[in-house]
Image (tube, rainbow, N blue to C red; front, side):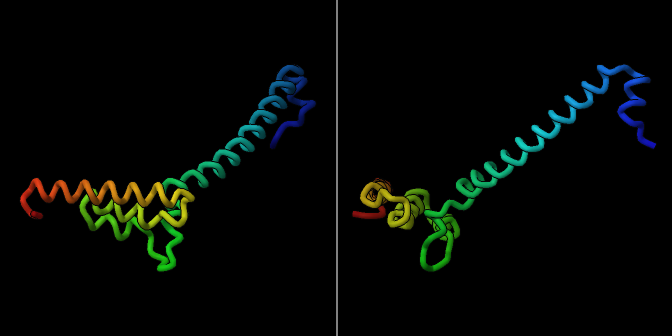
Length: 115
């Protein structure tokens, strides 16, 4: 059986009741903060794990599902091409894609694959 506030106050003193009320208030604040952090964390996870600019392609395919099957340079070029219409920096993304393609061409030339 749970004791009433009056019984606790008589047994342990009124300071105990004030401390219990403070703990209850702090627990409520912490629960509220935790809910807020959980919501923000979920939004961050979406931006990390599945950002819109990699999921908005009309095919419905996520960019990573395709580019992970290519070399680093080609995969990165494809990533920049893929997201270019969705991230708001289309020209910059196209230039980055070109940079990776040119880097891959130089790599292949050095390896004697392309002449």
